[in-house]
Image (tube, rainbow, N blue to C red):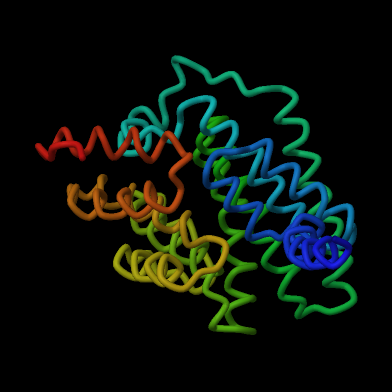
Length: 278
């Protein structure tokens, strides 16, 4: 009997170890499944174990952003592909005050921790990536929730700058291509008279290059692979390529079955394309 208990205990060790060692990959798995509470629970444990690491704090700000984007139904395809809805201010959005407070606190803490890390080592890849994330989610919050598109260019530029610094240090840091790709596509989409006054480092305003960078993250990224697919799906819908968007949504719905948004958007697209539900 004692031998059986010993064997059972050994078999339980891997599960116990996994429970005691939360990872960013697991937190993002929860986040992309829109399990925001589960994502925060894991991130809180990671942050408690490594309080000087800015990266999990940056992802905490991402979790608050995605919560708001979902709650306000901003991620609905009709919103993101309709420029009029993106800029319309007749119906102001009402952010969750508590979520906004926690979002801002996470941004501030990320900045402080990353600045300290970069002071010790100007080439700290983790810190550069964290700052690229925090400035990127600031861009989204300002543009999509506060509807201040022009004001969102400043954090977008900073996010790109950090990503470009990171890619100079490590061209195989594939997650950084998301910010670089988004910047390329965004600048390429601006009206000429605005583009004339906007300059981003190493960004020419080529939509094609932007899409290629996003595709690189979608193929080889670690943390942002699903997010790159989301952005590519939005691009495909904006550019009237519904079959490409459908393929991406099929992959996202398969990989994140608990996310109702992917299933809902896929069903709407299938209906438009005349595809029967499985």
